[in-house]
Image 1 (cartoon, rainbow, N blue to C red):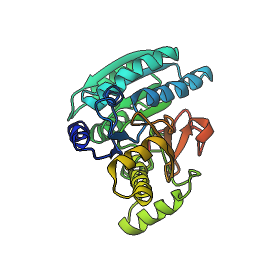
Image 2: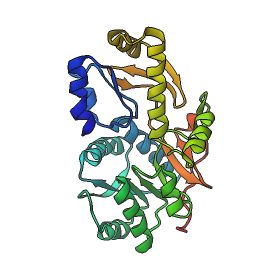
Image 3: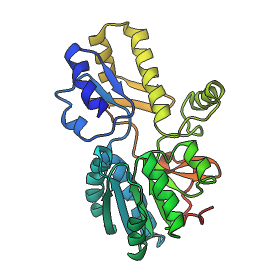
Length: 288
């Protein structure tokens, strides 16, 4: 919502603006009206297509059969769910139930019990951090441990891993970890730990840092001439700690949709396989 509010102002005054944590398919629709706005993270459609492709392979391997989806009734969850339906249908996945829940929900156990009773062995939660914590805690409480347990924002944070004793086998939206083969990735991770005495998350932090690397390079090469910065953003593929970044109509089209999984304290990238840092563990281990 903050990006939607600020992007038109940046455009009005001609300031190139990178929104490193913005996720919405509407930015693509509004690109002609927001020519100065750029997104870094993978947007809803390619992200959920990646999840669908992974689940399809697991189904074909006989590891999962039925999928259940829960999404927060807020812009993030609504848009991701809108992308999930077509992606899962195209992959031929059997979705046994889809449930929305309000922002700030305090009890999701009835939803999870319903998924369990429906025989779902793959859970896809399009969740924000508070309800992400809630849905994980209550899955343990209702004794539901599906073969795939995928949650949204917050999964890639070390606090989630630590809260759930490693969160072993939990999957989530990902995009980065210090093992990726991008120049400066390990150095960024180590510098973050040294400066802040804690690890960065395994998703947007690196992309936020990468957005600053991009602007630093632009200013270094063309100065503070804003039209020239915009021209460089539109024409250049940038090498960053988050990998190559190339914008097309304001959208980063270089980074694929990704899935990560907590494995022995690291959030391994398990999909797509071409850029993975580990193989998916399915079924996930029992809750700690």
